Image (cartoon, rainbow, N blue to C red; front, side, top):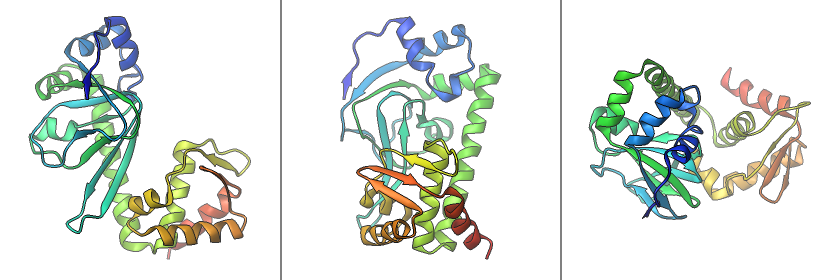
Length: 240
């Protein structure tokens, strides 16, 4: 990690304006947040937050990408999610004072703004708009985790892979004419870590989906050729 060189107030506000929870804030509100921020640059592979450490800052991802994960007692990596520019992390510890619940590592060169727990809480208590945005963020996290637990407990591995592809198509791609293009797809190992399986199972299911003309792979891009059919496969299992 390196401390970023001095960032002007105007530039700091421009960086912070990409944060989803801040998109509707006034310039005055952004300036107040910027005044409380410290700026840091992390290179790919550098650890930002360690599981169970006692730091309590909240981080805003303004450039780059970070990965949230933890390692099971057997040493297996479990990927919780990847955070792109516009995301926040660390707010749980800032709110409840508990130790960190996961590791966060930079996937690419990443510029982060950090703010102390006390300053973050002051923002929430003093600005109703920010408070509402953070509440929506937390409820969204609970819904996503609920969905993930449901899939892990009730869906077999092939269906978890299909559900993950469908999720990527809906969140990272524009669906048009029953097709979608997912760029920068996670590797087979990363997909396996995301859904709790092994690389061979991912490879096998992707091969099957390609044989059925539901997907087409080109390098690190996956073309969803039939979104409706993929949705039908996922939903038919969930309804059983």
